[in-house]
Amino acid sequence: MVLDPSLALLTDLYQLTMAQAAFSSGMWEHEGVFHLFFRKAPFQSGFTIAAGLETALDYLRGFHFSESDIAYLAQLTGADERPLFTKEFLAALSRLELSLDIDAIPEGTTVFPQEPLLRVRGPIAQAMLLETPLLNLINFQTLIATKAARISLAARGEPVIEFGLRRAQGIDGALSASRAAYVGGCSATSNVLAGKRFGIPVRGTHAHSWVMLFDEEREAFLAYARALPGNCVFLVDTYDTIEGVRHAIEAGEWLRAHGHRLGGIRLDSGDLAWLSIEARKLLDAAGFADAQIVASNDLDEKVIESLKVQGAQISVWGVGTRLVTGGDEPALGGVYKLALVRAPGGAWRERIKLSEQAIKVSTPGMLQVRRYHQAQEPRALVADAIFDEQHGCQTAQIVDPLDPLRRRTMEPETPFNDLLVPVLRAGKQVYASPPLSEIRAHTLRELSRLDAGHKRLLSPHRYPVGLERTLHERKSALILSHREARAQGAQEP
Image (cartoon, rainbow, N blue to C red):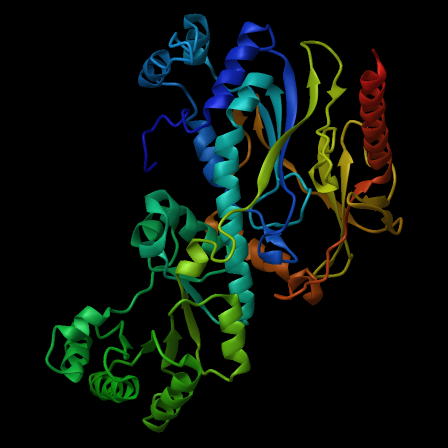
């Protein structure tokens, strides 16, 4: 890991104060079920790509409170300037070993609002302590994987290289973004450490500074060609872009004469559509029809789509800032909500968070996601049902959680699979994370199963997700029960 090997303090203070309160009130061993989900898809997208699970599992494997963690917590004080945590609680933390059961949707899977990406079950204090780190690890990578998938769709199958290291939010932000971008469909990264750590292909050209070292641009290109004849993509916009293309062609002729090939040119400024068209004409006329035109310069899915409409002759897309930062939406609004509680040996009791906003009302139960799909390849997606595993998926009808009048009934023979799979049992990992290349391939397969209308960048068609009807009915009854109890309480003298 980039940071201290003990990362248990990567949490918000209130998680620890709640754990202390649970310890003091005798609820330390009470059990809970929490779900991690998001309410709205990022970028107004018609889909989201789940990511970050392997990173979360890495965190969970190393979860423990070190001696220095305990020493730090011991010196914290409350508003009364007395120790915030008791010695007994800190001793319990020092002995703590995770015993939770966690189920998750595998990385690279298309997911949608209200669906649990993770389900955490076990001792309530342990589950509380994991809220913030799990949200941190899953939210960001899911956001970036989704952005990368949208950019890759806009590129229409042409390679997208993640160029964002220098603009990313710190070391871990850069590594996490490179990983998630590859999950989402990028073909390579410029981040060499991410290449080493995750096995992502690395790609790169040269900077303007290389050209500026020389008195003449053609000298810079020829010197680079002699040094790296097998990796020549020349950045041509240091001075005059069209003249730079001609100088790249001269270097390409030298490469060809010496048994090598010109990889291509890179455009990093100006009118990318016009410049790429003119560059293509020059390259083709000189016999370099296979030389690629790489473009960078503040690209995202909207800019790429616009360049495509303009007939740009770009074949490789280098995307940096607007990918690794999330661009127009810098955070996924993932949340982590309690759905069930029970005392040791007792029965589960449902819990629900109410709100004046329907989108913020949580769903009680031991939730699972059932995905219905067509029988024929590529097994196109039909709809998703969120159901309670305690009661089973009793009907094939789903109810939109935000509009109960929107309902859909699946045909009896519609094939399905349940998305949440075991990843931790009694605190021990039981899930083998596939290689990152397989996760990326899974993303591409998942997107191929999604109707084109759901993949539109602008105003996508909404994919049908709903609560299984009997779960919807129980949730509605629980909401009414809470509201009636509050109304009755308000009327009492």
